[in-house]
Amino acid sequence: MTLRFLTAGESHGPELVAIVEGLPAGLYLSRQAIDRELSRRQQGYGRGRRMQIEHDHIRWIGGVRHGFTLGSPVALAIANRDWPHWQEVMSADPVPSEAAGDRRALSRALHRPRPGHADLSGGLKYGHRDLRNVLERASARETAARVAVGAVARQLLAHFGVRLASLVVELGQVAADPATYLETSSEAPRPIADWQEVVEASPVRCPDPEAAAAMMTAIDRAREEGDTLGGIFLVVVEGLPPGLGSYASWDRRLDGRLAASLMSIPAIKGVEIGLGFTAARRPGSEVHDAITYDPGERKFRRPTNRAGGLEGGVTNGETLWLRAAMKPIATLVRPLASVDIETGEPVMAAVERSDVCAVPAAAVVGEAQVAWELACAWMEKFGGDSLAEVERNVAGYLEAVRNYVGKYHG
Ligand code: EPS
Image (tube, rainbow, N blue to C red; front, side):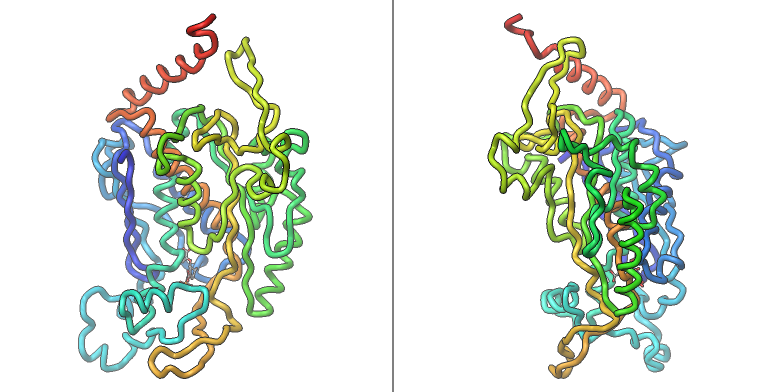
């Protein structure tokens, strides 16, 4: 195990916390950079009222001194500004009997599971009679903590020149013109710098302004109809060396880890790496990326990047690109049929305050999960208890990569 993290906290509890273990000592961690990521996650057209209440930022709890990691576990917290409204409902201590008696403290109990949510399966599994006990933790609120952890991972990667970005390529029935983010001739993502500014300024994180407008119209329509929308986002990573991950064992394959990491985001139902499912529909000659060598740069090159930057579960030095599909949010203002778990009677599912569409936010969470997985792979390959030690290991390896061709035969 190289790096690990754990989060805790309920959606309407006092705060979310995260502990990250295994970071090298001496890494500068900017609190502002973490807060910037949290703010990116909160944006996006289609979010509900909760995002107007929260202004997410972190408070350091441990592991950092004067801006630098100590090598001890790094712990942080994100307060829920909504907490004052939920202090009784979500009280950790038993509520005083008079408060319980006035039923206010218990009135938010949930008995009508929402299809598509964890409500029913979670209730059956843990034996909860109040499904709020499930929804509070299954809520995507928890992804705020993941984004904070991802922002830490990202700063480790950035130290070595690795850059991550994301964009929304489809939302509901609307698709962005692929030419706005993919090079047609090479089937590689366009450089991040070409589209990042437009995407960051877009309320739906879409590089195609026409499609972005249509996406927002679709969200408006869904809201009016009491419905929700899903979509597909793309995560792009530049500056990775070849050799992260391993082909040698199933659980060290980086493609598998990245897919699992993205699939762990609430509502993500599919992941594609590079061409993804399209590769299955083409002959091999139109799927694999030819290899060339640049003797001046002492670098292998690929005229195309359909593999998405990974071959055999190992990075190949090309830009990493992967897509994830998000299903529409399960809380419907016009709810589907459900069953009251108290009475067994058919009822309409519960309606909770929620978002109409959170695909732009999920893209930011996707970046965080990818950053985390890459930081793990980075530490696995380059190890080290201090940043200086990691730097030495990286430099030695990159030198060996540059000297690879002809080393033994030239
Ligand atoms: C969510 C429901 C909404 C979302 C929430 C996820 O929260 P609430 O029930 O408080 O209105 O806003 O997302 C966040 C709080 C967040 O930070 O992303 C759900 O049921 O999953």
